[in-house]
Image (cartoon, rainbow, N blue to C red):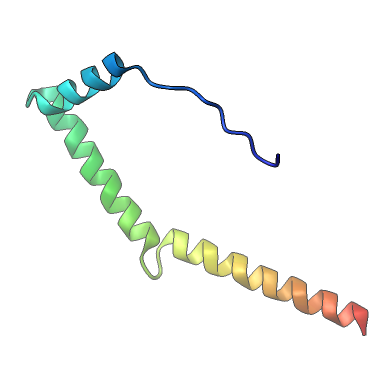
Length: 76
Protein backbone atom coordinates (compact mmCIF):
# COMPACT_ATOMS: atom_id res chain seq x y z
CA UNK A 1 0.00 0.00 0.00
CA UNK A 2 1.38 3.40 -1.00
CA UNK A 3 -0.17 5.30 1.88
CA UNK A 4 -1.15 3.94 5.24
CA UNK A 5 -3.91 5.42 7.31
CA UNK A 6 -3.53 5.24 11.05
CA UNK A 7 -6.71 4.16 12.73
CA UNK A 8 -7.03 6.36 15.74
CA UNK A 9 -10.43 7.09 17.12
CA UNK A 10 -11.32 10.09 19.19
CA UNK A 11 -13.29 9.16 22.26
CA UNK A 12 -16.87 10.23 22.68
CA UNK A 13 -15.89 12.19 25.79
CA UNK A 14 -13.24 14.21 23.94
CA UNK A 15 -15.70 15.09 21.19
CA UNK A 16 -18.35 16.01 23.72
CA UNK A 17 -15.93 18.24 25.63
CA UNK A 18 -14.78 19.98 22.45
CA UNK A 19 -18.36 20.65 21.33
CA UNK A 20 -19.28 21.98 24.78
CA UNK A 21 -16.27 24.34 24.74
CA UNK A 22 -17.34 25.75 21.39
CA UNK A 23 -21.04 26.00 22.24
CA UNK A 24 -20.82 27.49 25.73
CA UNK A 25 -20.57 31.10 24.54
CA UNK A 26 -17.62 31.95 26.79
CA UNK A 27 -14.45 33.78 25.86
CA UNK A 28 -12.73 30.60 24.69
CA UNK A 29 -15.69 29.75 22.43
CA UNK A 30 -15.70 33.24 20.94
CA UNK A 31 -11.96 33.03 20.26
CA UNK A 32 -12.30 29.58 18.64
CA UNK A 33 -15.11 30.84 16.40
CA UNK A 34 -13.19 34.01 15.50
CA UNK A 35 -10.14 31.96 14.57
CA UNK A 36 -12.27 29.53 12.55
CA UNK A 37 -13.77 32.44 10.57
CA UNK A 38 -10.29 33.88 10.00
CA UNK A 39 -8.89 30.56 8.78
CA UNK A 40 -11.95 30.00 6.59
CA UNK A 41 -11.44 33.36 4.92
CA UNK A 42 -7.75 32.63 4.34
CA UNK A 43 -8.66 29.26 2.81
CA UNK A 44 -11.22 30.90 0.49
CA UNK A 45 -8.64 33.46 -0.65
CA UNK A 46 -6.01 30.77 -1.23
CA UNK A 47 -8.41 28.68 -3.31
CA UNK A 48 -9.80 31.58 -5.35
CA UNK A 49 -8.44 32.58 -8.74
CA UNK A 50 -5.05 34.20 -8.17
CA UNK A 51 -4.79 32.81 -4.65
CA UNK A 52 -1.76 30.86 -3.45
CA UNK A 53 -3.35 27.43 -3.93
CA UNK A 54 -4.56 28.36 -7.41
CA UNK A 55 -1.11 29.70 -8.31
CA UNK A 56 0.68 26.63 -6.94
CA UNK A 57 -1.64 24.24 -8.77
CA UNK A 58 -1.22 26.19 -12.00
CA UNK A 59 2.57 26.11 -11.60
CA UNK A 60 2.51 22.35 -10.96
CA UNK A 61 0.41 21.79 -14.10
CA UNK A 62 2.81 23.91 -16.15
CA UNK A 63 5.78 21.96 -14.78
CA UNK A 64 4.11 18.68 -15.75
CA UNK A 65 3.39 19.99 -19.25
CA UNK A 66 7.04 21.04 -19.67
CA UNK A 67 8.21 17.66 -18.40
CA UNK A 68 5.95 15.88 -20.89
CA UNK A 69 7.22 18.10 -23.72
CA UNK A 70 10.85 17.48 -22.74
CA UNK A 71 10.29 13.73 -22.64
CA UNK A 72 8.57 13.72 -26.02
CA UNK A 73 11.51 15.65 -27.52
CA UNK A 74 13.93 13.02 -26.20
CA UNK A 75 11.94 10.23 -27.89
CA UNK A 76 12.22 11.81 -31.35
